[in-house]
Amino acid sequence: MTDRQIARFINKSVRRYTVRFPLGVARKLSNKRSFWAFGVGAMKTGTHSVQRMLKSYRSRHEPESRMLLTSVLAQRKGLLSEKQVNRILRLRNINLHLEIESSHHLGPFVPSLVQLFPESKFVFTTRECISWMDSLLNFTLEKDLSKKELQAAFGRGVRFDIGLSYSPHDGPLESLGFRPLRSYFRYWTEHNRTIISSVPAERLLTIKMRNLPKSADHLARFLGIDVSTISVTDSHRFKTKTKHHFLNSLDRQYVLDVAQEECELVHSSLFPGISIENDLNAILDS
Image (cartoon, rainbow, N blue to C red):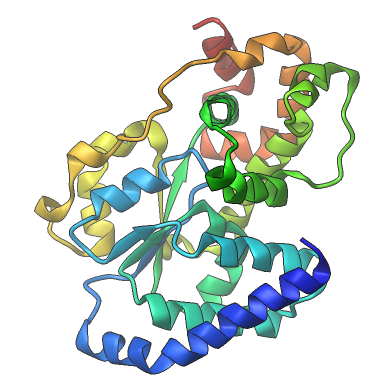
């Protein structure tokens, strides 16, 4: 998108929010929240499952994602100030009036959400960096990049196209249109580090993705709701269907070196006792 296209899209979205503002206020007054939370895990960590577990409440997965992605791009280009971003987030929140919005697109905005909405809580799903990378590759390779997938392709560009050059070891990735390996691991680290450093401990529930099926009690206590209202059967409905084993096409030592360089500090804090090397061996040897 050009700078002009970005500005036009954001202005149009803000006008739409403003027109809908009275309806949003009425909805807020007539429909009190049972709780207020944001699901803020990285992509492929279970944000969709979290939304489905709480489907009996006003919940949505990745609503108005194009607006969030375009705002990230606008901020990166210096086209949106912090004050303008905060106004968008306030208007958007009033219009949606959800009990939980679960979306990895929220990641860059978490510091603002924490400050703007002090009554809200955050459900943070996590996944080991190699397991996450393997799942992301499988998920992307399943996608048919037809017209209906253009927004997903745009989103991947916003997240991972950060100006890094390909190394000689990135050949298999480059040949299929992926970004350099380092871009993905840097996203994993920056997204997770943003959550960890921004959300006060008392407002944060961290759930390892593999533990989602047995997290209902923790989730209910954290949100202050009856555990019977949580759908445990929806805790992992969105598994990637096919294992492509694409990581096996990359040099093993290269994958390990890049993952350790980019992710080690955050990975060790989230997954003490699970080394990146062990995670890599488990994925490649499975």
